[in-house]
Length: 137
Image (cartoon, rainbow, N blue to C red; front, side, top):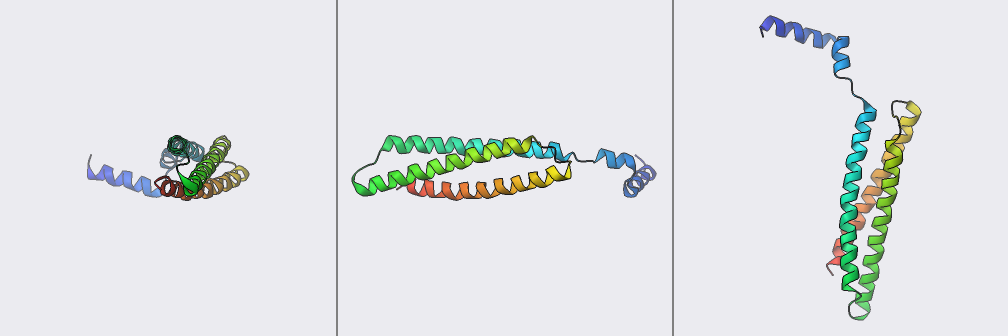
């Protein structure tokens, strides 16, 4: 490619010709769908980890003494809370992925759903940190 052709192509890109705008146009609905799928897959991974932890807690039992019973109840409560929150996130992801965010009203609702998902994911992370701490006790 000659330098003259390169300069002409660079000039077209700077001018923002319609051809270049169409080539680089981003479909936000497709992006949102892919993002929701990846979040859902991460949610499934955490759910799998929680079910494995639940199985471990149930197999260990309460242990000896009142402290063992206390840790057993705390573990079951934390794991149950985490699983419930993950189910809620999954439902919100399903509802959110079915929206066309190219509409302004729907886009605002989708952004609110994403904020709720982010908040719940943060809470799930904190709960899972406590699960790991109490599971090893």
